[in-house]
Image (tube, rainbow, N blue to C red; front, side):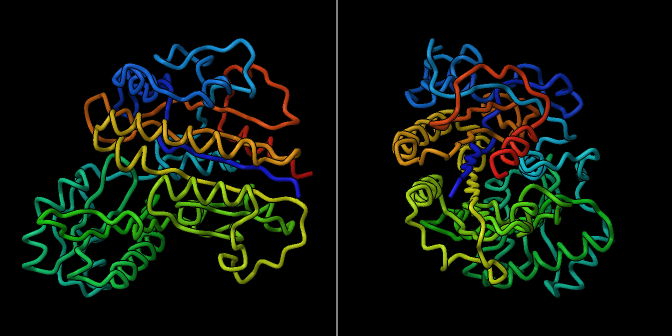
Length: 390
């Protein structure tokens, strides 16, 4: 079976887009470069050998004369700097109209409708906020009222946080489903509803990553739909299933950390995943092609948004150690794509995503290494995969 493997290192941008100021970002934002500088270089021998250091002057990532992969820089066509927009474009869908954002909080009529249809009694916050900060600030009031904590960010997100020792996880998911329905029916054009469960651990409100769920808008037709319609396998690892609202997916498994996502990707490459256990009921198989599609979210969620450049660097180094295991397990016809979906520079002011270009590394035993230069559109990846699947 011919296979494409796509690994998205969430938010590992490599430099501001020309229109970054339109997205309230500064030209100095460059997630990978600034993380490298902060950490006095990174130890990433596999990414280095693939040509990552040939893209720019990244401290500690050397330029190599004979890279083992194709390498280039992708410039986003879509109007956005968020996970959904980036992943959809990777899968061939360019978003000409940006998703709606709510810098003043959500309108009263929307919040009232959410309260009425969920019967939650009320909400707390309803403002842009850092997720870790808002649950610490409002945890006591949340326990007193049992009202969910509703917040947004610079991205198009409707986020609902609850302590699942107080409000059951199933109730949180149900509230998110109701929110998604309201937003879609009333045409608010909100990219994602995000369930943000947490627990109080050792006296500190702590988010539970493995139970997070994203409820995205259903995308129009993407590469994933094309593959599924041709009976190919489309295996989503991490939050891929949520980003595409299950559209075009045949198999899916959620993860609680990058390490788990990398372990599962390695298993998938080694054909050791229990595919029957994670298959969708409507998948019947029959194709000679498989797409393994992995999102590694810790770089963004745990480190980018929390301005933790040290943790960000450690996460990239951890990814590199797994690439050392994945590459030798690839079959002769396999092709690996390593990229990102946007930036989230932990060294610049603010905690939001940054409008950046992203790296592209393409490796396979049948792939001739070369410099691809600057490429207009993340959808270049979808087009390459279409060619492989023929």
